[in-house]
Image (cartoon, rainbow, N blue to C red):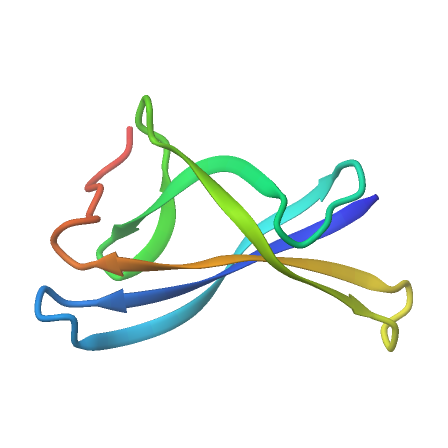
Length: 100
């Protein structure tokens, strides 16, 4: 099945003050059937300035649980979105800098 993976990302400062919330799109993947509670292994998320990006440094993989699966029957063809558990990123702690 073809799934579009999304994840709610909350960006906060060091005092846990909300700066922004972003729906990060991981992209579309062809995979076997998924269910709520399944785990997905993917690159860890980080910040480059205030943009959410993949942290592709070695060993920076993360396991996220599937929180919800949404099937949009209004659009043609139908779109199946998989929402991964939300994540909080702290400016200053999750900055990854420049990626070569």
